Image (cartoon, rainbow, N blue to C red; front, side):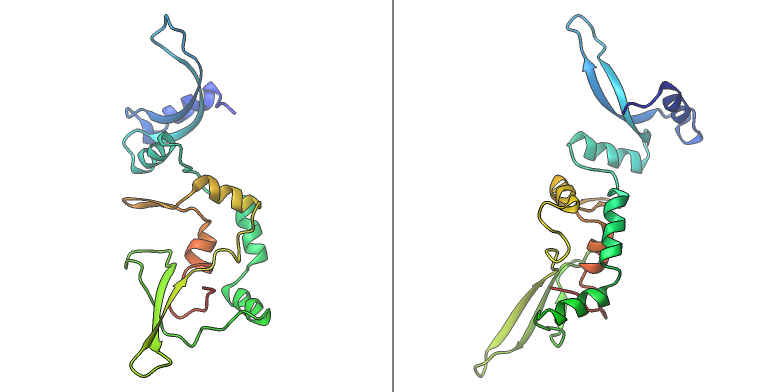
Length: 190
């Protein structure tokens, strides 16, 4: 839905935007050949020109990537169905999933990462002088079902986008930074 002219004026007159101008997402209606000015509706005000948040959101919007937070309904549904990591792991083990918690796993994600989703382990192999190397990837499939609202939202995002100082996750943070993050001193599915 388009913003009302009044809402746009309030945003333009806000303390943050004084003299800076606003970055907005527009939907073009028409651009007559004889005119230098297109006709458009303001779909969303991203914020004052020159601010990191508004410029970052504008960059993603320009390339057709999702910059908004996940819908509240998806976030609430995830927290309702998966209230804690402990509960998720215990249910998976009770259903017959192999228990790999005895392995010493080391993440291979960078130190600044908040979504630790890749790890490796090493243990003595079956034959003398050999080793068994395990590759452990956070198990997203336990939480995202094909055709679900979350699946559709994640498909639309396609990947996590990392910009300087800001992350636009493909999955809700409850998953990417908690349930699916191979954090130290906690049990997770991989």
